[in-house]
Amino acid sequence: MTASWFTPAPPRVIAHRGLATEAPENTLPAFLAALALGVTHLETDVHATSDGVAVLSHDADLGRVGGPATGILGLTSREVARLRLPDGTEVPSLDDALSAFPDARFNIDIKVDEALEPTVAAIKRHRAAPRVLVTSFDDARRKAAVAALPGVATSPSTRGVVRAALAARTPLPWFRRSALRGIDALQIPEKHRGVPVLSAALLEAAHSAGVEVHVWTVNDPVDMARLLDRGVDGLITDRSDLTLALLRTRSSK
Image (spheres, rainbow, N blue to C red):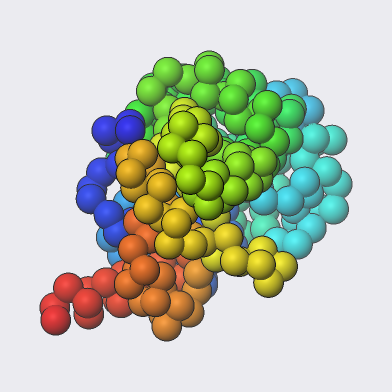
């Protein structure tokens, strides 16, 4: 495991797109709100501008958060820098976030092929690989980022998660080991379309291989407590404020 990203010890609270209760998601104020509460890990997503700058956004355009419906890939970095969301918040680049929060751990989902090189370049500029975990729903994209960033942590694509879940149910130790080789964390939903993804067998296999299990996206404190009781190592959540409050309550008992 990458030493910096995997500190402090679990359970981990991973703020999904920051804490967007009073600021738009994936913005510096949303990240600051989470960090101010004591969160150490921030989850975010990257797209790329037409001139090759990694911009923080879950969607391919900014329409859902009040920005233009024009795709980010159709805008230059200068055009994005001039944008303001309805509350006046700027749309940050990955460089902005890594610079603004030099001690934060970042969980970065590379959304499109065009964002791969800009994301790698930004992480290298800030020498941030030890405090970054990269992932992508596209496995080739994820592997390319990992290969370009020695020391970076990673969690698998959908294909890798399916392979790990199937391997955990087999009696073949070599298959279980091979399915978890080269990854540091399994970041999974508890269920997908009603079908359980998280299982006791998967938790056991992951932990035996030194791989953490993080579940997304968990916003109900009842679910948070239940998953922690099952032994998961981290919760990816829109409500890091509620998660931290729950952890404080549990630690005081």
